[in-house]
Amino acid sequence: MIERRTVTNALATLLGGATNLPVGRGVLPTSPANAYYVLTPLDSTLSGAPYADMNEDLSLVVQVTSVSAPDKSRPGTVGTLEQAEGLADKARAAFLARNPSTGQWTNPLTVAGVRCMCRELETEPGAMNDPTDGIISYVQRFRFDLTPA
Image 1: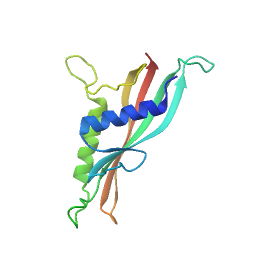
Image 2: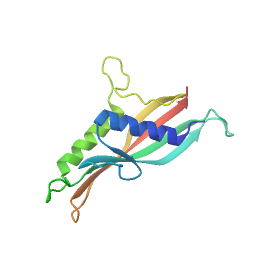
Image 3: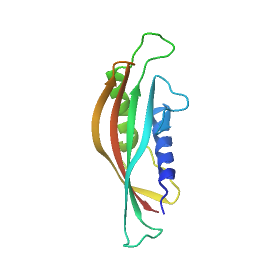
């Protein structure tokens, strides 16, 4: 059986490593900067045999919230839409970029005993802001289809 938390941890590691930015799992990262990600697992479905067994495929949707926030070391600063869109571009590239000569994912998703069959951008609601605290966020949802290796 594919464990969701193991996949979510691997996705957080992939996103953080590919972007060099902090990633929180469903919450603010432990050491947030003025730019960071929040990765939240959402829907999942199993497919395969009609009865539960240990070899079911898993389709997992995660939400990536890219956050541009004020720089705490510089009073009066606010997050910017440009930075939030840039963060979203980096997240998209982290999960979806491929090597043009091999077709392989640029950033491998490493989960023991699991192979990723498909990665896709499911929806991109885009930017949302909170003018009262100067935070701009950008929301994307990615689907990962996985099978036991």
